[in-house]
Length: 307
Length: 328
Image (tube, rainbow over all chains, first blue to last red):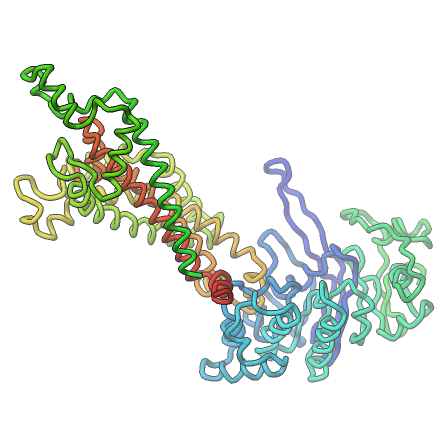
């Protein structure tokens, strides 16, 4: 469904008046998802995960530059193709319920999303009604304004808005952040259901435990790069995990050792070497000299000189 | 809920009028204007000191200020604002007639500046940092820092004196009365003062709408809308129009005070016989009853503007409307 190779996202900033400076937020990012799959992208908060979703939709700010190969359904995803697919075949479930316009009725917003996804005007009401009932939203909710909904309801409205157009690729950006466990569980179940109907779901989150509940595969995102691709099952034990960063994340889980030994990783611009090197316990001279390639390892992949 | 809202507003209006009345009475009594001199005017030399004292006594000017204020406030409360000395007519009827003339000027300028300013603001915001946006901003900043009377004089020089397209003065052709003038003639005379007023008024509403549009385009809901395939134009005109228009309407109503102030200057430049010009005349010629009357009238006028802004917000914003409904 989606195949990303060597994706990089750069921002041009002006420092001291007219001096241009390029900041590289994501580089050498690889990812692939098949239909029917939930692929989790996990990484620390602020690692640029949301930018990934925005890059895939082509809605980054104007000063951003995206490079790399993105194949969607086997064909390159050019900006022109993307603007035709956005909202029709690729949809976003946003991070926060502020993504609903506070001054428009919920039903109007879902209907607009349906219309934009290419559904004909006369079919919109039926489609919207179906989307509402799919997520157990009563008919009356359509006449509500967002401030009249509970947090869980608002999240279901967001999911309904994103899925009303039956997109094949769903990007869920931190769908569980700020939710109580029951509501979070419900949101994740909805993603699993979508995948089970044959859609590809990209679940972007910093919450590993939540992601593992529903994901088939996990891409570990560190300092803007893919460091490991693993099956969700690999997270059952430490020895199945390939990269020291993944193991450190696993160790930090409350259910495991619950130890956080890592300091946050600062991106040291375009310097050579392994991105994880400053925090790694297993490093030697080669780690500082060259960036490791992403290589196949069992059913997953890993980017480490020692794996 | 709505009755409570109205009661609070009416109570505030009464307080405001009391405060404005006290303050302006204080200012007028300590000003060097002598109402008797102003009344007598050019006949000053033919009137003896005794006669002046008779007038002063008749008007109660020999009484202490507190008592004078009490009598004036009492009369005012019954709706009697006195008689204008320059027009020799009750103050209320002078204000009524002049306001009608001013009203068309202000209404035209207000709706022109509101519609154009809002439109320009939307365009500038949607096309942020393009040449178009820069041009609109340059215009707005220039107009925001230009005095009304100066714009009026420039327009007068260009369109009335050089090109001769518009009349040089007044609200209708000289020699005719207001009733004799045709609608077309009146509109023709209204055009230039109204354009002057709205050119200036556009600036504020444009800059405000531009900010709100940019804010809306950067909001989470706009990002989500773009992810659904919405274009920038779609976001501005379908999604965010309400979010941008609501504060703009409020601002436009709240700017009635500035509109009134602008009208005073514009009417003076174009010799347009509205309330603004009357204010200047009353001030210069020491017509104290008329001046106080106009002060009170403009207080109510500006208050009404702010009140309308509040009311519209309550009626249009669903967040306020629904809570109001829930309580009542």
